Length: 57
Image (cartoon, rainbow, N blue to C red; front, side, top):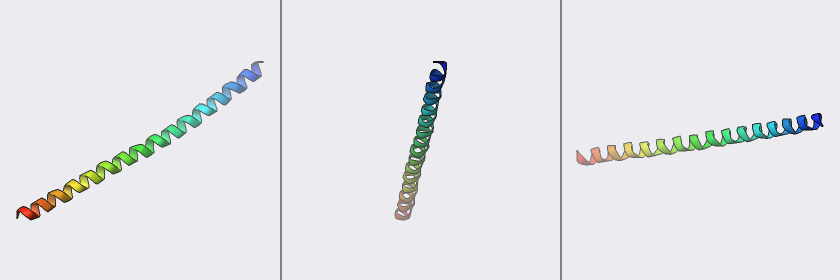
């Protein structure tokens, strides 16, 4: 009985670890995507700003 309980516990722990790894990877990916989005937006704003400066000259 004790062995069975121990086995189920280890299985649960391994499943939790896998979930954690998956979630972490997903979080990292989404974080990178958000960073990329922010970078693109900033880049566009810089381009717009330079365009406006060129136009106002």
